[in-house]
Amino acid sequence: LMTNVAAIQMVSTDTVAENLNIAQKLIAEAVSKNAKFVTLPENFPLMGKQDNDRLAITEAFGNGPLQSFLSKQSKQHQIWLLGGTIPLKSDKPDKVLAASLLYSPKGECAAHYDKIHLFDALVNESNNESYKESNTFEPGNELVVVQTEIGNIGLSVCYDLRFPELYRKMHNDNVQIITAPSAFTATTGEAHWETLLRTRAIENLCYVIASNQGGTHVNERETWGHSMIVDPWGTILASVDKGPGIAIAAVDLDKQGKLRNSFPVLSHMKLA
Image (tube, rainbow, N blue to C red; front, top):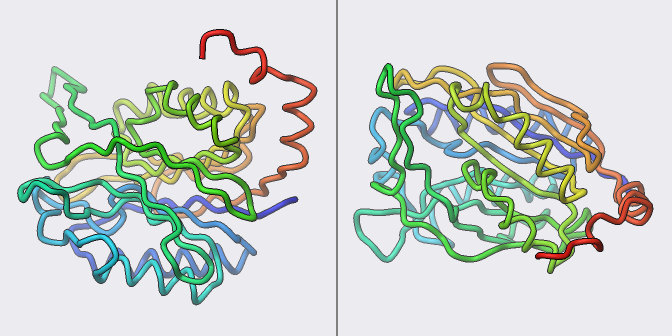
């Protein structure tokens, strides 16, 4: 079973309409190359000047223009579409959930994952580059693997990539494809991005589809780009450098199954 999948890279601005317009064009381009599963990056609708700018575009789950956009795009093109992350209302008025929503070819939300690990870190002491997602985000607490005809898709977001136990637990649901929409910083991206993605692919014998933000945003923060699709052997099948673009490759579940049988690392686990 082979399926073309696409990781879309964006350099999202502080204008939602502009970002949705760019996303729409890139989705159409991916579909023109026969992609049946398309992923968007973390924070694709908005990379604002301030972290709390996202509060203004927050939606209740199941209702709102961002979710309507994703539903319409998936239905129109009859694809599986992962909406990177959008801000959804949490039970705290001043905090939102970083929600990764997966839409089916019928335009229905088939899965909803709230980012579990929040990025609170001092990345570069010399220029005081620091992040504190917990100021505006409420963490999720539920693992999500969704069964689809193109494979069992495990949902994760950005900083989650540093927590291998999250992906190990996905094997209880026979995960085959891991998604990791991100807005990885240029500093940490240069050091760790490719290594983390290839490692998660290799140790889990999974395909990894990672849509990243890739450029300088209005708040002058720079994201790393290098969106990529990695196969279960750790080979990079497709990638984008910087700026908006699409990485597209085929996911081959038969090949993955044979690899898991001949190289049965997953059945040798002792401590999981």
